[in-house]
Amino acid sequence: MLDKRFIREHSDAVREAVRQKKADVDVDELLSLDERVRKLQHESEDIQATKKSLSRGFAKADDAGRAELRAQSVELDKQYNALREALSVTNAKLTELMLLVPNIPWSGAPVGPDESANVVIKRWGEKPEFDFDPVDHVELAETHGWAEFSSARATWPASERTRSRATC
Image (tube, rainbow, N blue to C red):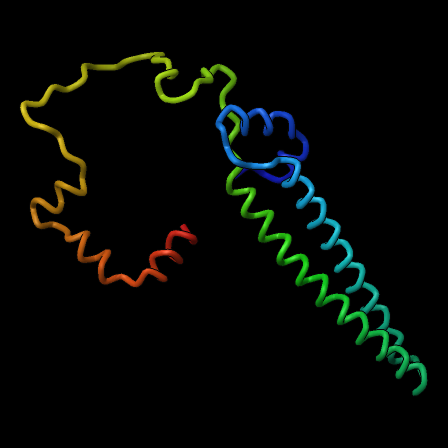
C-alpha cells in the first residue's frame, strides 16, 4: 500500500498508475477523504486540549464557575464523540480506497491491455519438458489424499471465511 503522504505529494504519478493498471480508484476522492480525516483529527485534538484546560480551571473555580465548566465539558464531550464517529466512518472509506491504489509501475515497464504486452528481458536455463501433464498443488494434494480442500471449505462457516479474507 502506498503511503498517504506519497499519494498527496505525487498525485499525478498515482493517477497515471491508476490509468495504466486500469484500477477503479478515484484519486481525487481519496485525496479529499485524506484531507477530511486530517481536519477531523485536528478538530478532535483541539477539543481535547480545550477540555484539558477546562479541567485545570475546574480546581480554581467557585461553585458557579464549576457548574459552567461542567456544562462546557459535557458539550465538548458531545462534539468530541460526534467528531470521532465521523472520523471513524471517513477513515474506513479512506482505507477502502487506499487498498485499491496500485503501486507505481517501473518507468521501463511496457503498458499494454494484458499479459500479451509483456516483454521478456532475460531467460535463464531451459524450460523443462515433461512426459506428463503438470498439475497444481491443490490437485496434487487431493489426488494423493494429503488434503481434502472440498470438505474443509464445506465445514468452515461462511462468516469465518469472509472475516479471514478481510484480515489477510
